[in-house]
Amino acid sequence: MKHIIDVTNLKKNYGEIEAVRGIDFHVRQGELFAFLGPNGAGKSTTIDILCTLLKPDAGEVSVDGHPLTEGQTIRELLGIVFQDSLLDRLLTVRKNLSTRAKLYPKSGIRLKEAVRAAAQAAGAWDFIDRPYGKLSGGQKRRADIARALVHTPKILFLDEPTTGLDPQTKQNVWQTILGLQRREGMTVFLTTHYMEEAAASDYITIIDDGLIAAQGTPLFLKERYSSDTLRLKATDPQKLEQFLTEKQIPHTLNESNLITIPLGSTKDAIPILRVADPLLESFEVLHGTMEDVFLAVTGKEIREDA
Ligand code: ADP
Image 1: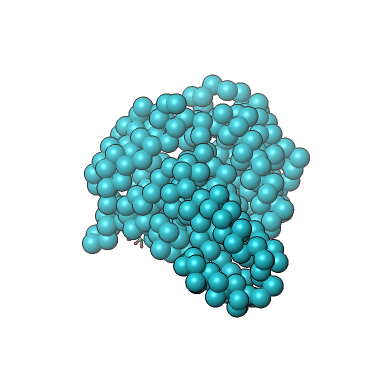
Image 2: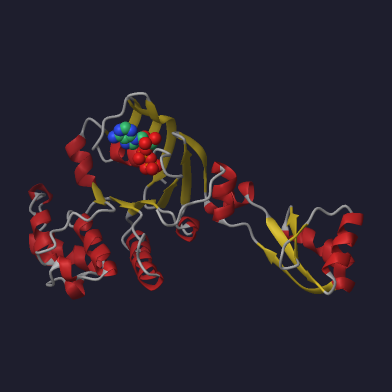
């Protein structure tokens, strides 16, 4: 698949602070790309450069074949949803969208049609004639996404699009985002603190301290940076623990008397279960998660309240 974004040796300093220290990555056309990193890692700086809001100090960037010097062309290719909404609270969603659409006369699409298509794609059609300020959190986020779609961009940038939403609304907005990517073929560039969203993306790049710390598909990263674990509940935990120690099987016993054993692969559980069988009450094999990956790669827990 074609690289719609290509970044080579990108650098950006703020005075003494080296925010981005020479990063390489690419985004393929039509994929859901997750850009992850702890706070202060350099995500916003990188995104602001890609969106032509900030000039880099060094490096090459190409967006759909255009260098950053072609700022206007690039901006027309991008839809951007920032964490802070840019919509006018007093105006209806429709008025907000049409005001925005008027900024793109060159696109040639009829204004009303563009507004309708954007609102429908973002799931904002049902409340298009309500003032933005009167909408619920999830409706506001849909309206924000609709605004970003009104000039039919090729790439949608979403900065933590579901942060602050209740679980049900979060799920609804997430389904809308997936729909845009899968049904409309939109390339989606996402930052998120929710690892289940990262796990559902096509490709992940993790930045830490201004450098790329890891990249790959969720499956690749999980295989590389996390491991499966076997969790055992024993009829006599102390006895099982002593038994595992004698057999030199690495394990930990937690406060709830559950024994955890790291596995190289799921199948490694079988011989352990065989020998532990007489003392077992129950067991489960837990797969490595994206949280484990993030912790292993950055040494930091992802903050969900950010
Ligand atoms: P992230 O989005 O991953 O939280 P940022 O790109 O915002 O990271 O920040 C990267 C580093 O650059 C941090 O150390 C941050 O404090 C610093 N930084 C970001 N913006 C500015 C700025 N305008 N002036 C000075 N330092 C900044």
